[in-house]
Image (cartoon, rainbow, N blue to C red; front, side):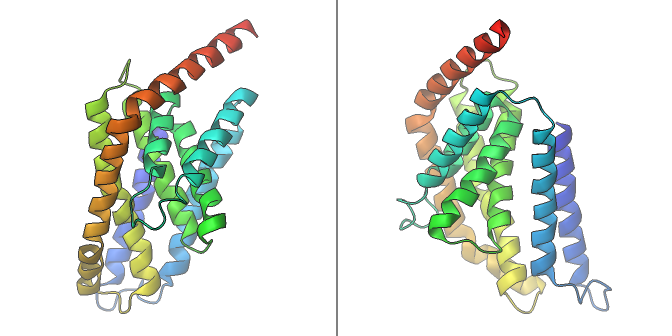
Length: 233
């Protein structure tokens, strides 16, 4: 919960400074927002990885994260031709839902990094790492309050994350590729992305309904076995 609050505060602060930069005679007018935005999310990701490194992580848990991150990243590639529709968000979220927000964040961040080796790395990669990681973090948060797979709550969150992912990435697109940075161009950027964000959100719901229960049962079985092995140690 503390990590979730910290990351939300970080993003809200960034957005507030960005809004201030749009005002006439603002001291933030000359900021290179494309560079600064990458630095902000890069620091956020680094902080999360450092906190993860301080944990005592079981090798089997590391193997799980590597497997799920690889699956999430590779599954994005065949769907690259279908704009905004891919199972990556669902896989990251179901991992976070079962194993917790921290594991979900790491899985999402690594999945974005891995898939971009095939689809193209760039300054947008840290943003995608953060956004997919944040989806896993949110899923882990609601997973704490569920003893089994609440498919309705998960599907609703998956739908919401489709828009949250797009809205966050829109900030990068706006500060990196749109000129001038004004309220009009900001609104235009979000309006232009709405159909793609909707496809992403609907695709998440479809993947959740079709594969959600199966993935949950498989991952829960693995989690149970991992927990038993830890107790034996």
